[in-house]
Amino acid sequence: MPSSPLIDIVAGARPNFMKIAPILRAVAQRRAAGSTLRTRLVHTGQHYDARMSGDFFTQLGIPEPDVNLEVGSGTQAEQTAGIMVKYEQLLLKERSDLCLVVGDVTSTMACAISAQKLKVPVAHVEAGIRSGDWTMPEEINRLVTDAITNWFFTTSEVANRNLHTAGVGDERIFFVGNTMIDTLLANMERLRPPPFWAEAGLQPGGYFVMTLHRPANVDDPAGFDRLLKAIAESTRGLPVVFPVHPRTAKTLAALPGKPPGLRAVEPQPYLEFNYLVKNAKAVITDSGGVTEETTVMGVPCVTLRDTTERPETVTVGTNELLGTDPAALKPALDKLFAGQWKKGAIPELWDGRTGGRIAEILEKLLVH
Ligand code: UD1
Image (cartoon, rainbow, N blue to C red; front, top):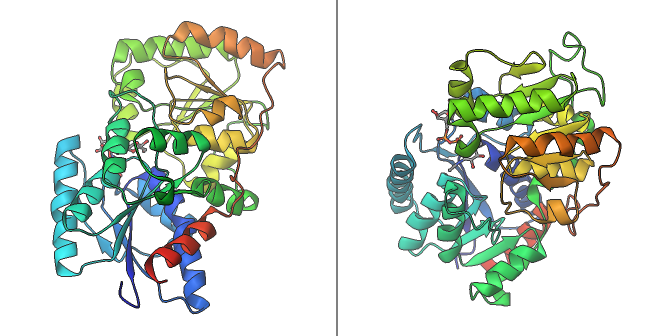
């Protein structure tokens, strides 16, 4: 290893940004204390709007990317191929000593493949989680990435077990906790209401937050319409604040009408989104990361999916898996209104110090 190893920190899409911020900060802190580790921040450009990308960099104090691959929108294969080609070009121009990828988006898998084929080792943060559902592009990304990862940083014992089952030895697995939760805990005091808070008459505990963007929930207009109606019928007239992902916006615009309580808004920046979540009566979602944040904030959460790659949000946290049948919503929300939702606890090592643990291990792996 060189005396001053270079680590590529890869980020491409919205859920990556809160995961890389604590790692960059922890490596910078070690550097200030004399470490020789260097980082190169590589943005693939999978998400490129201010609302999906730039706002997160600004709010979370993430430095400007050193490189932007500017892949832009496309099909899964177009994005994968575009990122692979451009990241390979970068590595051929200036090789790094480690490619660190986070999460499960297309950029995660694409950069891992390009790196490993050029014999640049790969570290995967949030490794080992599995939904078992191959219809989710994220599950394919997780499987492929973990198949070619050298060092696995994990968020849970379940992830460790999944990796053991896949034949990964303990010496390559580091159970460090959850960097997304580092970011949440570091910003808890900075959370702030969105500009529409007062005008919409929102009160703590007096509204729901909803996020939906999985193809299974939002791509079919008739199914999406049924889902929205079931939500309206189960939320007892309380406002449902709905930051609309670009994919969902297309289906929403094509619907004949929207339920009266639904308050569709633009995708929210980090501080505003989590303020809304923290103060909500409950969250209705098909996201994975949001179920981790609700667990830590102790906010009831219903997930409209059949599977989760984050089972500890259900077994330990405040999350319940309802499946995609809209009929399941009413009984679940009746339980919520009756004050019978579980309280939940915080999973092991989700303590705000994961970035520091990762930086320390990287130093041991690359420098010592
Ligand atoms: C991606 C991730 C998903 C994550 C989600 C969060 C994969 C396979 N999926 O899905 O895990 O939960 O991000 O947001 O990587 N678009 C914009 N502006 C942007 C980026 C995208 O308008 O800045 C539009 C695209 O043109 C496209 C749609 O949003 O129409 C979907 O974007 P895409 O990157 O393909 O995947 P996501 O559905 O966002």
